[in-house]
Length: 139
Image: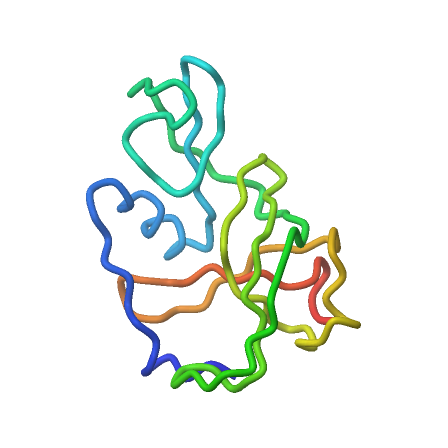
């Protein structure tokens, strides 16, 4: 369970505004370089592979696999513990750090390479956070 009132609220910047506008619409947005075709995350105004500024924003599939995680047992004001801090590999290639929801936070339930899908939680009127859950919903 997440206590949204105790979560730090991300601040949209000119470089990240498209990402946060997408999450408000339940859309995970990535960027792709038009020069070298690299897809990347986190948002930035240039391609990390070739430094080109010819980049486009697109809606990702929202599909991912569990790449790595750690189960945190230390107290956090916004999360009931334990909770997983995860790195997921998006179908489009980039990896992103996130939290896993709608799944037991145990090594038995969190299997590497398990299929995941994005889900969004409204934090404020301006910000919705992307989390990942097992594909098809809760296990």
